Length: 258
Length: 221
Ligand SMILES: Nc1ncnc2c1ncn2[C@@H]1O[C@H](COP(=O)(O)OP(=O)(O)OP(=O)(O)O)[C@@H](O)[C@H]1O
Ligand SMILES: [Mg+2]
Image 1 (cartoon, rainbow over the protein chains, first blue to last red):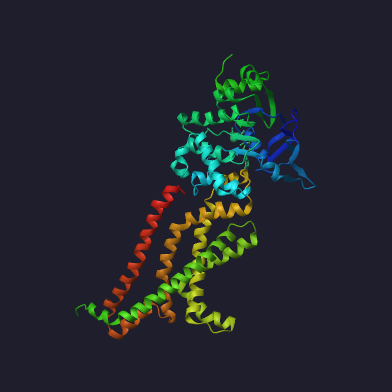
Image 2 (tube, rainbow over the protein chains, first blue to last red):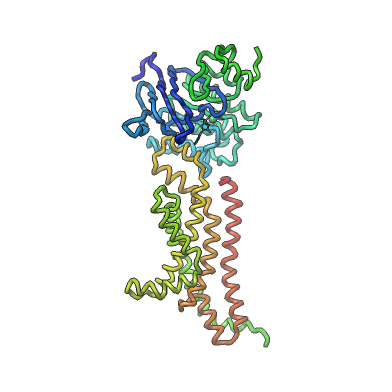
């Protein structure tokens, strides 16, 4: 059971490499409290996507562990360091990617109800009802029977968010979900995520959008070279960072002058 | 010598029987060949190197040798190896199924490969079990993407099936040759036979375009 002060997610000495030479995460420690909205920023290739993919159970790890709600669900075990993933615990986590990942052969409603029906055994009628309610809430009611190819990028990403929410996640991971969008479509997706934030959905967000980061974060982590360089409230990390590397990065990427 | 197509009318029934044999043979081999092709396509994209090697040899052999020789081989050598007499139809079915399996496996392999890794990421993120990933996400997309090429494969098979006449199966081609020999009117008879093949194959090739425009464009896959 989760107590009020226990961490929601606890990442300990997480190491991850691709092949023998590319070390991406070099001993990462992050503790996330319930209700927190953590924005992860950092230079390209710094391992932000890798971190989220590991948390989602999409990548093997070298060593370390991650617990969710006190339950260890990702760890490496045995002499051969096999990555062990507790899929039951992982189901509490939802993720939306930078690339569009809707199933192209299924319409919007079918995309939303596939997992609830196949994973939880929910009946089609009730899943469809929930799907339509969710689509209405995201301003997509008219698109319930459209196929992904008939949607704009912004609509696709909103559907992808709705699809993840159908499984009632306790934590949402967003990896640069607006990076592939035309600028005029970014706001509609960010609005949906802000709407979730207003309902206290815990989330971890990777973004390069300064405005969005400021508005959504309850905490910002600057991650570079596979470790956490700076970690604190958004005013500090984005406004007056303590670490020089953070300052350089923010100056460069977000064009903020002090 | 003037062309006289009226001669064909006398052989309507024989031609119809031959056509029926051609269609029957094609349909059976389309079903069996596509099933074989899908399994071989999976084997060729498998993680097990032995499966990949065996299926690779099979495909390259059947794609790289003339179908006529494959046919002769199966008609005359397979019964010797198996020690049983095979009916003409059985031999024809085996030969063309193996041929169809080889060419459609390439079609399926390409369509399986074209399903991006992000689709699998989404499956995992949604907690879909492996069985559901295959039946509800991978298989339908692989089949949909393969449909245009599969239709072309079917047209090829339909036309290639004329080769079975060379080993004495009474298909449309065989009947046509017989009539042309007996009437000494090869131009008229073979022209009509070609038209019959065309009348059936042409709508199928048009169907390829239709599927591409209507279905695949709508889904953008
Ligand atoms: N599947 C992979 N195989 C090999 N190397 C990889 C793989 N995925 C990522 N990498 C490498 O790992 C490093 C970290 O990548 P990652 O995508 O996690 O960075 P990122 O912080 O998300 O960067 P960006 O801001 O560009 O998205 C990069 O150097 C990248 O080239
Ligand atoms: Mg990334």
